View 1: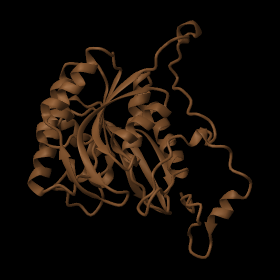
View 2: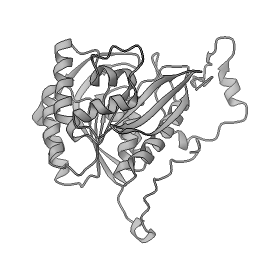
View 3: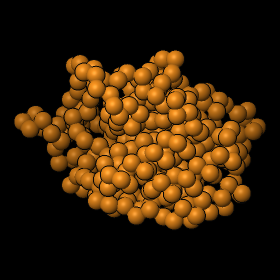
Length: 315
């Protein structure tokens, strides 16, 4: 995928006469409002649009945060979450779901009930870290997610550590849990697949593995970026949901979405004093002038120069 061209549509192509006037596929995303635009519904809308689909954003909570940290959140009333979704579902056909942060256990229950009425629509569930929540609230939220949403999940996505803590809380081996072991644990709760990101490898590389309980299915290795991001998980999960919405097979959707995320991070920007935000519209940027990367890199400090493009020393 070229960093200066729009992401290609997946392998499923409509005949030309059916493409004319054809509306884009619609993805309904349950997620929180995040005023940074890094993740949450703002990230979902940007990502789904960049992939050529249309996002139907349903607000589950309001997260108070900046680009460095989360301070607190306010969950919406569970009935209000469900009503948002029900009204649009009576009007617009959808071909994929994405679930992000749902606010609290009551919100999880309301969303799960809506999902259960559409069992044939593929569901992408993103498990973000919710470490800012009070311990009891966090536990009840995760328990509800495990019991109500995972049984309906096509693919569960999360960072290796976050997934391990969630799926294998008693893991005490010296070696990290494998993607297959995480997939087996997810399958016990009903999830069909996991996409495990951020698996640490030697030589500054990270692995990202799609797996089922039978074993790994696909994966992409990338060099590690030397900067911190916010919004990467929402970007990846929304991209996969958009690709599934047009009929892509899961293994090809995962590979293409990982490539899309990699390029979004490479083109990322820092709008404030905190972390870097992925640029989901990297393909719309003009080509970089020759030598531009060298000008942006400060060899003395090994950090980004004033133009503030994240350095990609080893990815």
